[in-house]
Length: 188
Image 1 (cartoon, rainbow, N blue to C red):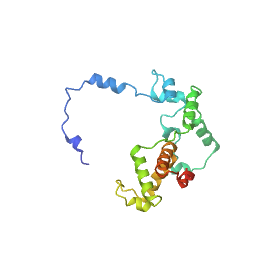
Image 2: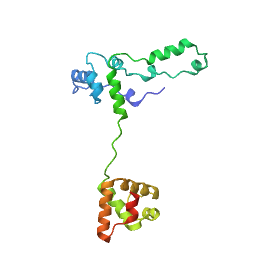
Image 3: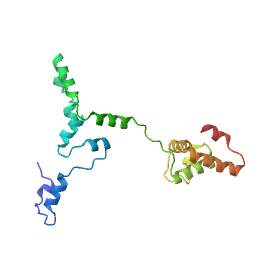
Image 4: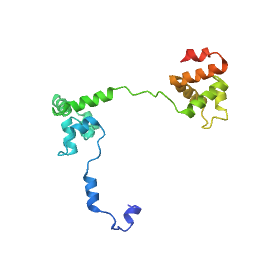
């Protein structure tokens, strides 16, 4: 089998590299951004031991193995199913970490309350000029990104869900016409 270009090249020693500094940097643990894991982390233990103490898996392939075809076809006994359940049993150590992670996962995501100013101007221009004719909007000269009618429809729907900006747009439009547009007010 042919060697790669890097394997064929002559190995060169880097005199400018500080090997001790590189070794220390490699040995240092990465920055943990998850607060529950960071508080429960023990620097004296290895990564595998820390995760096991928290009830987490360091290797999901070992925790929940995918059975091979041979194992699937073999007759299942009650003892085999017991072993699988025992593997899933978590240690009693730091159970609060799992509870905190589950609570973080259950929290609802924050919805976007505003869209960008250029997107707002784009949607306002299209709605002022064409109303709800999305095919005509797709052919407009201000459609720089060559959005399709469906993409423009989604952008305008997103603009209408941003209540603060959409209400400003309606107020500005009412100030120009003298009366609010009832069709757009009922849609929000």
